[in-house]
Image (cartoon, rainbow, N blue to C red; front, side, top):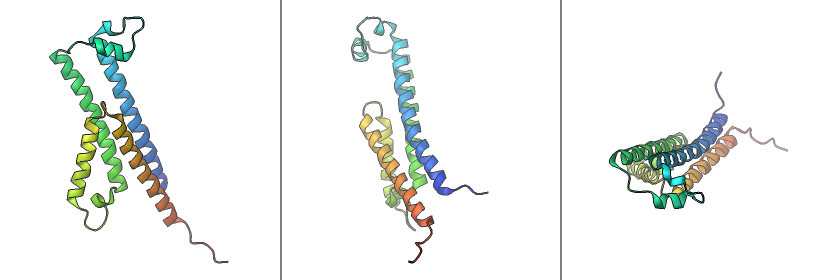
Length: 157
């Protein structure tokens, strides 16, 4: 019994979107927990919010910086592989994957864009949202294209 490829693509698209949001949310919570563990007095002030607490944060030690960097890298790698995997699954952008001879240079440029985007996910949320939106839109287009190809031809009147 073979699985319906359109349904599989729908599931992959939904998993990509949810996975991206979950990774980003987990990384933000992880960073907040790490900062709070490193400096417990950050949130002791009764009217303290995250911005005020971060302003009071002192320079982290070498070990603390290493832990923060490790957490950041885990999130960056997770986002990169989510983006890259879905991009390969869709075979998009077309210049990098489609056709009889995909252009290797375009594929490397796309890889670099996804890498840079993933590396700055904590400082710049908007680029990651843009990439997620573009890939989700390409997924929707591919689902619609495959649905049209599978649809039976219209009956003549």
